[in-house]
Length: 179
Image (cartoon, rainbow, N blue to C red; front, side):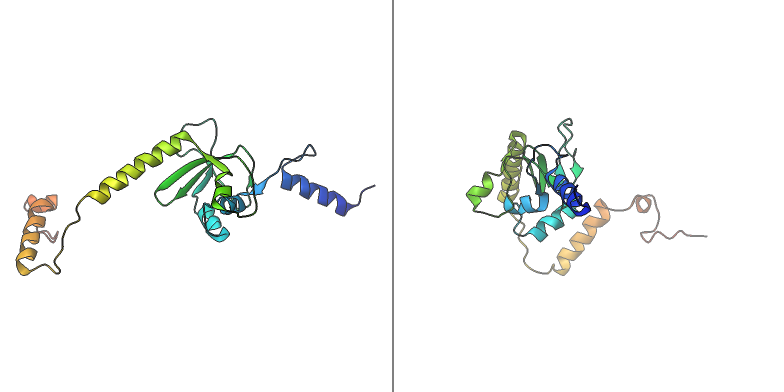
């Protein structure tokens, strides 16, 4: 006869490994895996991203761009799971190919996941868009606007961005004449 403490240990181990008593399938917490795969520099940054909703577990049945369930830091990741990782403007859809709780070299980390072809294409388009914006000439500012510049700006705003009621004969302050 097994003790109550023994039953609790078995139940805890079954919950941790994601098995119901069958063969053990390895699992890792998602925050540890993201840290080990070098998506984030620290585990606390990975937890912050998870809490902010930047990590989603993708569903296989949906093609929607935002389909996926938010995960919690203690969510178990298994081999074959699909995750969407958002870091700033960049989105990466990855499939877990290996598990690790330890952070290794960058070459070891690259073996933990495989980025999908759609994600690679989307990131390449984003890179081109960012490069096009960076290639545009930046406006040259010579300091504070002069009095003449301020008058030109005021005239521009008055003609281009005037409220609709001011153009219809109302005051610019929005007050009505009660005569």
